[in-house]
Image (cartoon, rainbow, N blue to C red; front, top):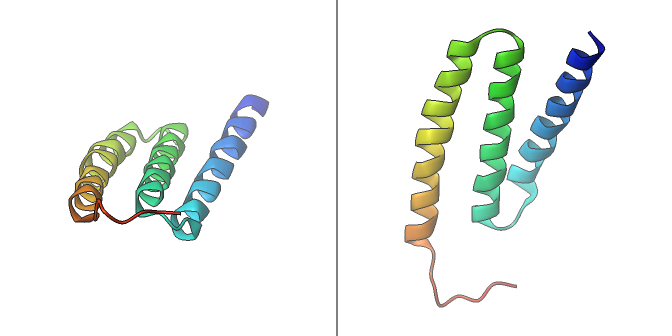
Length: 85
């Protein structure tokens, strides 16, 4: 019971921290990486709730599909001549 509570607290912190990172980070690429971490930690929450099918769909659809689409959009629309801070 204590291990489950600690695991939940750890992944709750990861979810909240990476979700805050999505909106607070200036770089779009880093924001997409934080989004991937948030979506993966939500999948861990589904596993903890014994909803393995939802966890698998979370990983396949959101992490596998949407995040790859965002990554390609960021890579294709970024101007290579612009220097960042």
